[in-house]
Image: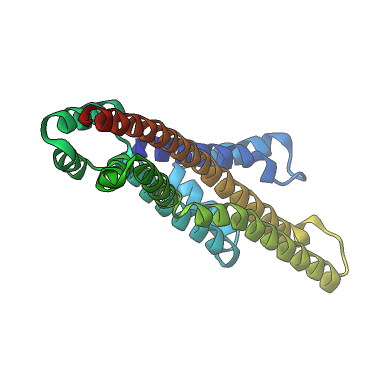
Length: 255
């Protein structure tokens, strides 16, 4: 799953970079020369293209954008692994807990939850641990601990959101600096020649493009993580209702 998303992510990154190559060609060159330049620029592999554009965009302004991408992807990978490990077959767990309740009581059901990973099993354990105090107390314990588990699922998402906002802002900062540099060159040369301002404008365009690409990549992963968390939260709520019904039924059978 992680490899699949990273492959799609990098394919989109290099695809957009390659598509942007003809736009960055100089307008003053003839059409045939522009086509040749674009073909030569597209011929290297994705890694070489990324490295070339990174250097052309000035590492001073591109490095912060790259740091946002690296840190953001690191947090994304950690969250994907955590959420995949947090996924549980709730129907199977409910069935196992119900069988344990019938055969061995609360202690046997807690043992089943203890041997099952994931937030749903942790919520079940907390509810069963307070079941002797009554169904109402157990239900409150389930709700409270469910909020704790949701907070753990969402851990790290604010940082990913920060990098999504920060990457294009850093890119725009590089754009502004590049334009200031271009105007400084015009003032020094006292001549509005394309050759004079080309360097500064190129830095401006590349930093903007890379910042937006990083934000797009992280935004895709952010939405995936958010949908995954919503799915797990829904499973937790549904399973919690099933556990409460099970405890009510179990207490009624005791009387």
